[in-house]
Amino acid sequence: MNGTANFYMRPLEGVTVVVDLDEVRIVQYVDRFIVPMPKAEGTEYRASKLMKPPLGIAVTQPDGPRFKVDGHTVRLA
Image 1 (cartoon, rainbow, N blue to C red):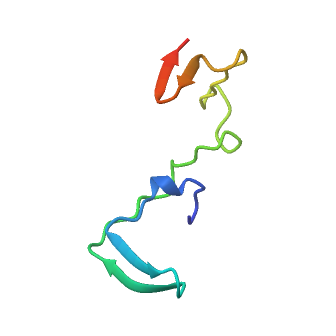
Image 2: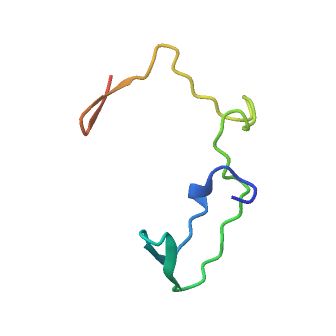
Image 3: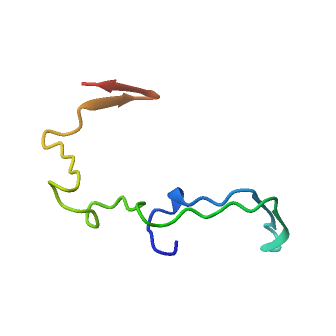
């Protein structure tokens, strides 16, 4: 994670790992190509770590969410 809690913004690409689940060990590791790792700066998403308004952005919904989820459908209220 190296400097960020948001590891989804720093994906690993081109890596394939084959694992033997019975033996609980890596059987094969293939790194197809080298991709530069994005910097951790600017990837923070936790509200407790972000700047407070007016410099940061705060979204609140005191009356609850203004959408409804019905199965795979999202409807705005």
